[in-house]
Length: 91
Length: 198
Image 1: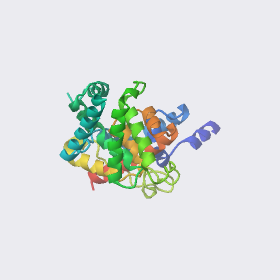
Image 2: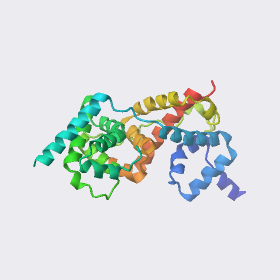
Image 3: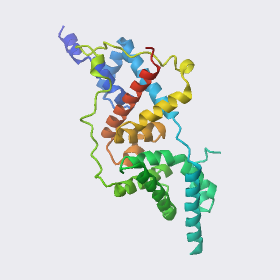
Image 4: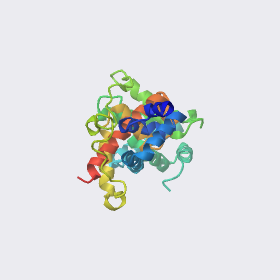
């Protein structure tokens, strides 16, 4: 029974698993920790769902587009550029 | 056409092409503003830092040697200027006081889920009003603590690699991962609250 007890001791629980998700996705877990994490997921639908949600979150964040420049800001930048070009070409 | 590589745009703007400059500015403006805001006391100052950065980029355009990507180069110039402009010291990368990925109240005494995550991923395609979700995510990103916001913006919005992010922000891989973890975990919670079945 000793090996089994030892293994049980090293199992992780959900509260630990959610803290390992990013290291897992980044490939930063040690081999042993990765196995432990995956073994936990295999038996835990909630943490499996949680990992899927983190992946979906990353994907949705990648779809966030920035506010476009306002017309005023664009004009300011064009002005900045023209001044630089004039200075450069004037020298 | 908007997908023209940064390096090509840089070449054209060097040759005097105004439109190439505007395209490059537009592409990176939001991320630069967000980065600058983490170092200076107000958005007005952050906007000045961004403008100042572009002026510096134009004046020093010969200095780009293509050893890093254009945006990594841009962001590094920006962060240097923002730090100089920032009245406050660059705060240390605070990681110890960050909360857990999921609120403790959602686990039982043994660390197992007491209140499991509400499901929303499968429904995402049907139920998501994409524009609404993007808007909610954008404000959630803006509300993240500075360092988390910077890392999430660079990694997940802008798509920089972890090496690029570490180089721009001058932080270790380990700290980058911790900040990314806190930020992403917070965004996941926001999405669950927004989209999960009540």
